[in-house]
Length: 446
Image 1 (cartoon, rainbow, N blue to C red):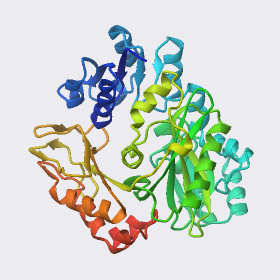
Image 2: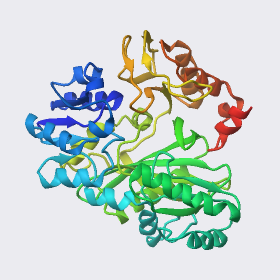
Image 3: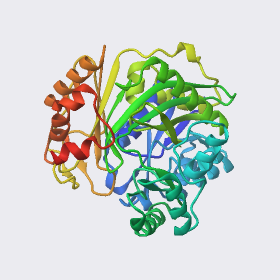
Image 4: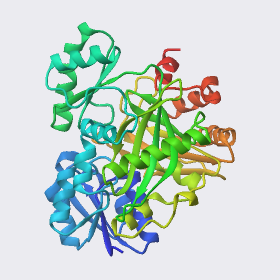
C-alpha cells in the first residue's frame, strides 16, 4: 500500500480522498492555489504545498508544479480526483515515467478512451451496441453531411476529446450542419486543444444511464449497477439517482454485462464509468467511458456499501478485486443533488463569502462539501460547492428524505441552486420518474 498520497485537486473531492486515505493509514499532501490557502481540504491534510496563483492553468493544472510538490514531499502516489488532470494522459504518462503511481487507469487507457470516436470503434468491434454515428473522427464538413444523411436527422456533433457538454452541437437539418460543425470544432479546440469531432444520432427524450465498474490488474471486472443521470442542463448533470426508475433486473443485468465487456475490450484497469443512452423503447447504446471517479459516485456507495475511493486506491496499488459480481447487492435507493454557487434563475456564477452554512443531517442523509461558514467561493473554479445525498429503503423514502434535507439546508451570503432543486423535487413528473435529458428544458420553460 502507498505511504503518502498527494491529492491533485481541491474542494469536496480533495477532502473526500484525504478522508479515505486517513482510514487506510496513508499520509496525505494537499496542493492548493494562492486562493485556496485556507481551504478545508488544505487544513485536513498532513502536508500542504502551494502550486501557483488562483488560475487553475497556473496551479491545479500546472503539471511541473504538481509533480514538484509530489517529489519534494516524498509522495509515492497522486490521486487526481475528477476534473483538472484526472483525464490527462500526458500527466499520467509522466507520473509513470518518474515512478509516482497515478491513482487511476494507465495513460494508455486514458488516451484510448479519451478519444470518444476511437472508444466507439473499440466497443463496436466487440459487437456491442453503440449509438449510430460516424465510423470515426470526421475529416471535413462533407464527411459530416454524408454521415448525417446516412444516419438521418437530428444528429449531434461531439468533440472526440470532449466532456462536460463542451464541443457539442445538435443539428436538426442539413442547412444548419456547416455552422454547427465549425462551432463544435472551434469550441473543442479552445477547450481541449483538439478540434476533432464525430457525429451521432440525436435521440429525442432519451435517458442518460451510466454503469460504475471496477477492474483490477489481473483482468477481473465487476459492475456496481447503474445510475440515472438524465436531469441535466446543457449536458451538465444536476440530479442523479440509483437504481434508475426504469431499469429492471433483466435490463440491469444486460447493460451491466455490456459495460463489463466494453472495458475488457479496452483492457481497462481501475475505476471507470461506462455511459449509455436509453431510448423510449428501452434500447441502450454505448456512448463513452469516463476514466476517472465520477462526481456522482456517492450514490453508488450508498446502495452497495462499497467505498469507491478506497477501492480505487487499492486497485492502483495492485490489489486484486475483493468482491465478485455475485457479491454486489443493491440495497435501497439513493439520490444526489449537486448544489452550485449560481443564481437559480439565470444560472450565472455567484461568488462571494458564505456568511452562514448549516448542512442538513439525520438518518440517510450525507453531505459531501468543503464549505463552512466564512468560506469564500472564488470565481476561478467550478461552481459546485456541495453534494447532497440521501438513501432510503426505496425511491419514495429516498425522495422524501431529499425534500426534507433540501428544506433544512441553509447557505447564506451567496446565491445557490437550492431553490431549483426544491422545485424539481416537487415536480409531479420527477416524482413519478418520468424524466429524460430534455426534462429540465421543459421544466424551466414551464
